Image (tube, rainbow, N blue to C red; front, side):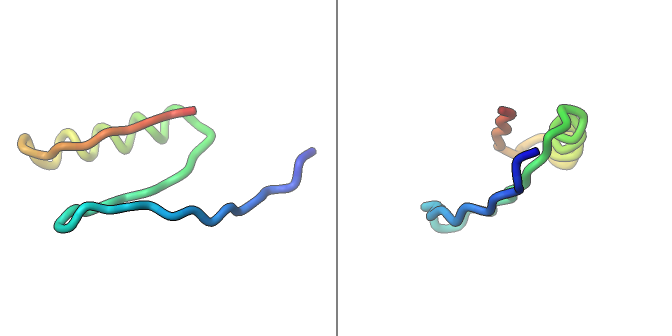
Length: 51
């Protein structure tokens, strides 16, 4: 089995933006995050990616 690796990267965050970064290997977690964000505010702009 492969050992877990941690990679440090730089991210340019626009001024005034709020950013949440997470990692999961389970599609249900991504769906749960989507549901929480989508239901928290009708004006919220967000994007999710799953790889």
